[in-house]
Image 1: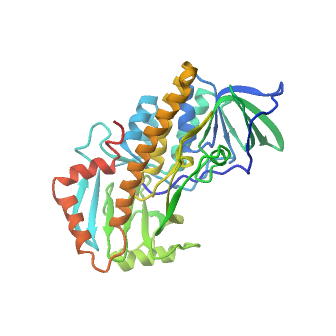
Image 2: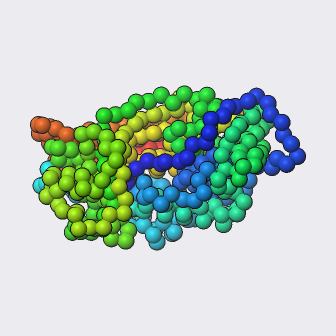
Image 3: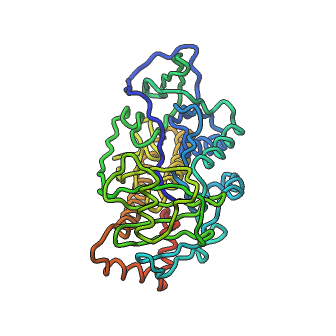
Length: 405
């Protein structure tokens, strides 16, 4: 439920209004730059619509860092529609309840049991396992779609197609497509090449996190500590592991487990020192939103289009929602080429609206977890959330319900 996509960014290049197409060029309906969770999902649903797709990914293999881990009900419904949800359910862990603490004293809980069935829970699954499932799905649909170790060098945009030059094994290859989609992360080469502005800001909030063997008695429940010294989150993972996320006063450039262990012990008296640790990371928080999610024959999805706070774990799921809506719009563009501008405008407008809503919800999560000398007001709000009928409303917000009209 924490973490943001980290996708490799191609080297600098530009969009050119021309380009030479030689006989060796292959043609595909869509080229996706970036083979992370959003790019792979988008490729899969476009393949299921019987379109040809090429995915260009710089990395040679999936990064084993666990990164994002929370898959929300709205995403499980998308995977169900695509026919792949079973693989996620077989590998993930279902979180049905979150316990809330003020400092180290339990104040109540939020349950997801009353949310719409059958996915009335959040599924915890490390991102590398999510990507492995999606990659296998894409490869089964079309073994030629995903091209790894591919770095985009130039984009040549013409009236009826877009030409992409990319480097692989020191050779320059080319692909011609009807549309190109940037799923290449927050520093997106595709977005920059399309000259789409990406305004935003950096928050003062910083965190350190680590994955440990689980020595709590929480089981499959999450725990959130609204401590006066700063937030602590604790989420269960498959294989009897648990993620700990701790608010820090400054960005920790070189995180170490001794610091994380000490912060957890100092705030809530819980000892992690004897537990196995498999991941450590630190992160800051940004919010960016592309001014448009498309330009001519180039579109954006995932972190290329929007960055929200990872607190609450909604960024990757927002990317999948954007990808689903984009796939619908792209299908209409090819079926009704005379209305392509109208379809892409509608996609951009709706997806930007959803991204703004998710960003506001993420800001609330951060606000609740900030350090306070006098936390009475914040604590009163937290008590209302977990000890009144408001908890049903908050459960829906936490599981990303109500985003799509």
